[in-house]
Structures are given as C-alpha cells and as structure tokens.
Length: 425
Ligand code: GCU
Image (cartoon, rainbow, N blue to C red; front, side, top):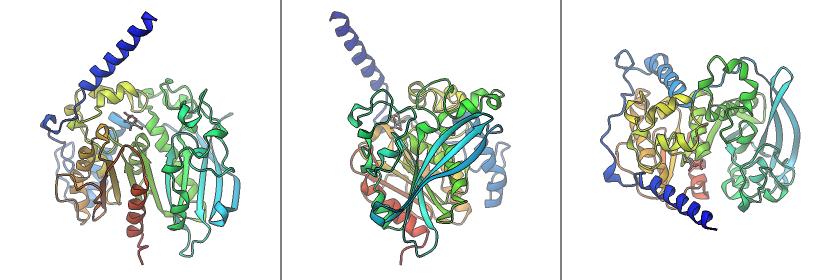
C-alpha cells in the first residue's frame, strides 16, 4: 500500500514538473527569427513561382525529409488494389460504399490496409470530389454502418470506446461518429474515405518492427534513421490517391486531404509531398504540424520526441531544446502546399497545440502564395474566435471549445471546398 502511495506521488510529481516546464504564456514566447522561406541555401533570393518550384521547393522538401519526417524507401514494395465490397444502396440509398483492400507486397509478405469509401449516389456534376483522412481507432468506429469490417490491426486501448486488449470490437462500432458526419458530407455532394492508421503502422515505439516498415527493412537498411510513423501514414494516403485515379466515381483532381491532431500532421505532410491533393486541411495539428516550433508555446520539439519517439525521424531529436538551429520551421511546410488551398483550424482551449503558432505558419507562408499572385493574410494576430478567415487560397479559424473535430469545423471545410471547386451556385 505504502509503495503504491509513493508511486502515485512520484507520477503526480513528474507530471507537474513536466507541465511546469511547458510554456502557456504568450509573454514568455522567446524572440525568434524564422528561416527565410524565399532564400535558397546558396543565398539566392527566389523571385518567381517557377524558381520556387524548381529550386526552393525541392530544397525545403529534402530538409523536411532529412530533419523532421523522414521518408519511406519503397523500392521493394508492389501495390495491389482489390475491391472487396461495393454497396450501391449504402446509408439508405444516399451513398455508394466501397471497401478497397490496399495490399503492400514484398515477395511473400503482404500488409493489407482497408480503404473505406462513401460516395454520394447522385453526383450529377460528374465524378464526386472527396475528403480523405485517416482515423484513430478503426474504420468501423467512424460510423454505425454494420457492413464496415472490424479492423484486426493493433488498436490503442480505450475503455471509454470499449477497446481492450488492443483489439477492435463490435462494441466500438460508431464510437467516433461525432467526428465523422458522413451523411452531412454526402448531402453536401462530397465523398469521404478513410484508412485506419494502425493498418499501416501501429502507433507505438516498436523499433519499426511491425507494419509497413517490416516490408521495407531491406531497402530501409541503407538509411534506417529515415523511418518515421508519420511518413508511413502519409505514404499510405498517397497510395489511396493512386487508387482514386483508377475509380471513375471519384474526381481525382478534387481530393481534399484532412486530418485531426497527429493525423493533421500526417495530412499536412502528405499534402506537402504529393501535389495531387487539391486541398489540404489541418485540424488542431499542433507541434510538428501547423504550429511554429520556435515559439515554444505548448508542446515542444523535445516533449513530442520524448513522448512519441517513432513519429518523426531520428534527426528531429537533435533539435530537442534547440529549435533555433532547425534549418526550417513549419511555415515552410505550408509553403510546400502552395499555391494549393490550405485550411488550418485551431481550438481556443487547445493551448497544447498553440493556436497562434498554427495561425502564424499560414501567415509566414504568405511570400510563397504571393509568388503565385494570390492574396494572403495581412495581420499577424489571431482572428476572432468562431470567425473564419479566408483570403486567396488560405483559410483559418479558431473555434471555441476543446481539442476535437466538430460540426463547426466540418461546415467550414465544406464551405471552403465548395468555394474552391466553384460549387457555390
Ligand atoms: C498528443 C500529442 C500531440 C498530438 C495529440 C493527438 O497530445 O502531444 O502532438 O497532436 O496527442 O494526436 O491526439
């Protein structure tokens, strides 16, 4: 009993110490200088969009691969798509549901991820635009639809969602539906597709022994330190995009990649790497996502690397407590998405994700968007709560409430997409 008591005090003490080291005070944000987004490593000033695209963009992409997100070495992998289920009368006739098994094959080893797709049954304007994002607890948790297969990949336990022994269960069907308003998205004329991220790489530090990296071991052995879970998850989103290019019901030029929290980091990285994503949306992605690292507000580089060592590549750890020596910051990640539309959202109570740092990344990516003649945000202070701001191809809002993805967020994303795809009649 006594030992247990001391253990509890120890845990409380560590958590308190840890949080007391985290800055939640705007007045304590250090002075910082961001790396120049339009200045090449050789000191050349980028003046045109074609110089950006041919010189600076590849340079920044490589820096992110080398220092932050790593890369997937896929030389040994073959991809096969297998449509395992189609229901033309899903959601009471509103939608077509498909389940596409994406097989990642290396010789006799195969990893299979299920891509769940809902497309509006009626899409009179041609193939449907579609939102693509990963989910946290299995495809069957996004909706009560009984036909969605239960994932048998490793799942993080969550007693509140009836998830025990790291296994998906019938009882966890639909537990996440509040974050996935599928019917509403269909009614607005969009498809929605998702992959359970654990089908690709389990979200724990397993030394990359499971999931996708099991299949890339040979190839990755040339550069094992480049492996990261975020790059594996983003890689899978690009493979889903490959599938969309083969499906006539889906408008491959109108795919919106989105994600919440850690999966928002994944969406941003996928959108940065793969120019086929037409719009990129980050919901509360925070540190290592939309938030500027140098502000050291909320979660820091050190904190995230210590809690989730597998998310980023090994080199990112060199910047623990040394944000100022990073050759990049997250405004450059947004710059990689330019000139495509990008929307970043924050929540007022989600200080851990640093709402202001998320907004400022958009603001400081402005010079790249301006090279394309687009208007950008003019003020470096946060917009008002619940007042979305759109200018040119940038969108942002800070919603009241907590770290979550809500109906308010979804309505803004749908409006933003309507605007860019000229769906407003
Ligand atoms: C943790 C982590 C964040 C992450 C979040 C999530 O809070 O520190 O960086 O965004 O989990 O994915 O839910």
